[in-house]
Length: 358
Image 1: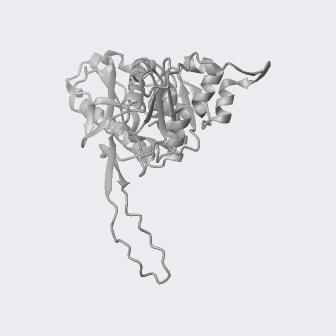
Image 2 (image 1 turned 90 degrees about the horizontal axis):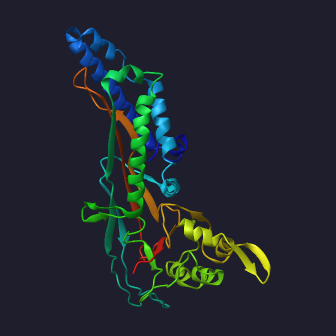
């Protein structure tokens, strides 16, 4: 989703996204030069001065792109997306959804005989399919045309200041989508859902009522916490989904504070409660996220066949064509991303969400 050297090395198909981004930027420079050439004879000296720069060069775009990478870490919840991008699936922009097949059941009549003549069937498996949309995220910002001289070199901050503010909004929307999807987006009857509300996410009700675990992980004592993650609802869900271990469990700051307390046996401190949970539970790592609040957690196996951001277009910025010399300089932030949470052929999930769901 972000054009870093590490991401391109791990996912070479991102290179085509980069080439398309640069092509759009070069097209703008050509269009800008054509617009000035067609109108130069009609322009006043003041208009010529305000349109004196010769397009946006490599120095300008290097600063723009550097800020896109830096700003992605400044929004709560982006740490979850950043972690999942290790198993992103890079697609062409023409893909509006990614579907996958699920193999159904087949007869279990395997015959055992001496002569091999015992009857057996020749049935075939059925197939079902599931999928997730890949929406486009867009936002814009601009710079007044009279300040254009400052765009070319030293005063690039005119663009960077506006971009920084808009990138914060843009990245917050990405986080919202990763967590909760978007109820307005649907492709081929497949809804846009996030980690918390995806139909394929295993869910635990931490609240009271029928089927509820009736536990507040922000304040429960160490025994109740450890029991929950081992023999209680969490451990049961992990075993039911045949999980060897979740790679990461994201928890709210309130839960993290409770898990960070000393684990005491008798009068001896033996690490933290979190250490004990990781030692006995099916969890490799426990991390804090301020995108989660109160009695809430998300866990997953970090595997592409379990959960994967679907990247149709890496986040990039392009300038929009100017029709007149006094038109403002407007820029478009654009990226395309969905989220796929899968169940396997047996209906098992490697993603889990817990909260007061009653």
